Image (cartoon, rainbow, N blue to C red):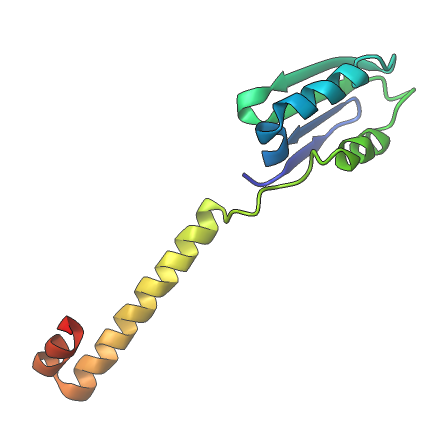
Length: 119
């Protein structure tokens, strides 16, 4: 999952691999954030890897809150490739193999290329 951040004037939502994979660390920071008077509500969807924080924008700005979350690693993503990256990689390999096969057939003929590919 890629990190997703949605900011409005009074709400910040972060969805990331870190939130999904580190529920104890996330719960601990949420507990600390709930003690801040400017924060009015926190919704943590553990299995979605998402936290939405509503706050009073007269007392707390979104950028400061986001900096706090970033300093605790909430915006970190996993180092695994995304679905689209996997699809592009596999599609490129299939395309390259197909092009090589077409070139081989034109170069040496279909019967010889079958023998070469079966080796």
